[in-house]
Image (cartoon, rainbow, N blue to C red):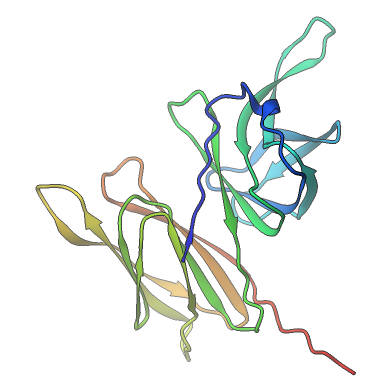
Length: 233
């Protein structure tokens, strides 16, 4: 299992002081909520405007970084009539990466607009359809995909092969370990059918419902399963 690294920008003061060794990163972006059209980042002095969709990841961006990558919105005009930059999120890459999805999640009732969750997608390299589950809650979860049960620790991820089916869908359930004194133990909080299509893998992000205690929100992102490369001599 791998820890899901959550980084929330609390303040931009001191960002420039966090200079480290250059890292080469390639990343795509996905919005958890609505499509985001009004953010950008700076790359070697050039402004890169973004449209971050909520259904399909963006094309891959490649940058070399020595400091955290900061995302901005345009602010009020300065004395020269140019828009100022208002930072809205930040993410720090701990090392080189060529397979990272940045998941943008809107923060409500906060001065910072987004938190960014960097996720190593871990696509299958052997042509096997997989589901990668990311438990982004503070609870232990039990996931059941058809007949397979998986224990998910808080903030952890797990990879499971897609079930072998001769039907167009399969049953999925999530149970949550309650932390309340009134109702301790395991609670079934999610039960549904997921569609199945051969040749397609999925990333599954599980978060706590901000409006209902100990309830879950689940987001699936599908992508084409990578096929193994043949070495021809």
